[in-house]
Length: 217
Image: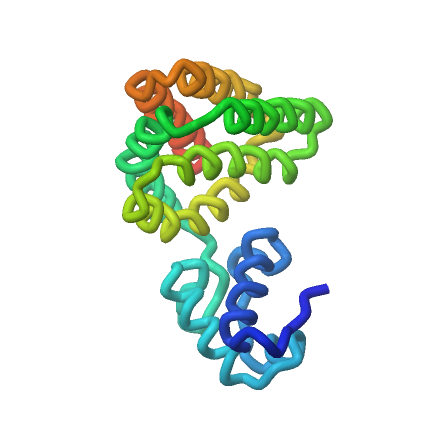
């Protein structure tokens, strides 16, 4: 159970707790967020909850509609913009990371792929999202460019929320995306940043095509 600690500002704790609940699906897309209920659930006053919700709104995890604040349900137009950002930024970060990854990093990345494959075979689709996100984030953090990391961090929460939406079609999807991860990792292991960049761009574009196909049904 999420707990508030006195040593950390309450609004920051509330922000982290609510963000986690959104990204893990405890607070579902489209769910209305009421200050009074959230303050009761977390055992704090409404003031830190209000500030936390403001921060989440800046992150676009929470959006305002006629009924109040709700968890962002990410329409197709949102998805398109998120993918466009990912295609423009993440492949370059992968290129930069190629020269910074050590043997342990490569081993850890390979473990992400293996665990995702095992989860795919067991049809544990919720777990797959965690491993796939870990794969992408572990590469980005090694790019060595603090400004680039900062930009990607602002998109990261929406990216995770986006990948959680993929659960809807993981049931019908082949494991081709894992083969793409392996190709990216092989290039990174050879410190071939340019090839890894091209492969990541192709990988993200393929993900977008799956989303596009799903939303056209």
